[in-house]
Amino acid sequence: MKTRRDLLRYLRAAKSGLAEDGILALDLFGGLDAFQVKKYTKRFRDFTYEMDTTYVNLLTHEASFKIHFRFPDRSVIKGAFCYDWRIWTLPELKEALLDAGFKKIEIWWAEVDPEDEEQYEYTQEKLIEPTEMINSYILAYN
Image (cartoon, rainbow, N blue to C red; front, top):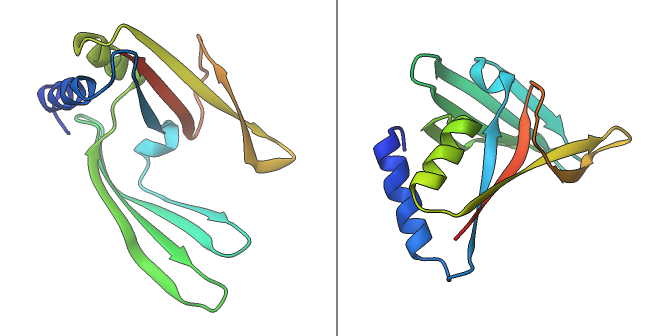
């Protein structure tokens, strides 16, 4: 979904499939690093996760990403997931959700535990400071 028209079409279709009191949950990707052509690596106990940002267009917010996995036995899954999409901003998504007919929008922001980077605590935010990577959810209520 690279155009607002396609985004609205998707959101309206998602809304029409929800129960009367249903909620659409969106996993938000973004942050300052989302607009950099670079590699992000995170080590876990049983594997290493790598995400390559291979293309970014700041005029359109179109971007391409590839996700790879490396394992202790030296095996690799290159290009396990490949994405070619538009990075939508929070204000654009909120406006589109409201235009699609959702009644209430909430943004839940992850705060990382400095002692354990795999533990997050989500809080509802009104103000979000710029950060390298966004880990948050948008809840849209039918």
